[in-house]
Amino acid sequence: MGSPEVKCDQVLTHLWQYIDREIEADQCVKLEAHLATCDGCRRALENDRHLKRVVRRCCDEQPAVDRVEALVVRVRQRIQITLPPAD
Image (cartoon, rainbow, N blue to C red):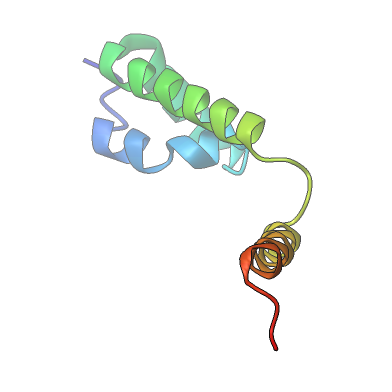
């Protein structure tokens, strides 16, 4: 199944680039031709699109470094609350 010009392993290697539109137009046409006729690659494409949507939904706009720093502050606050006062 699929386009004879492009093999499944080539499509699967470039799915994320395809989804993110980071692929050259001529290669995109070849991938789309393959995807039009290959059920397995289309399923992989839909699975990857779904995964990216879930990850996007679970992440907020705050940079990861800021989230880590905020977590460290919260942990330090918890530790201070639960530790007995120093004599």
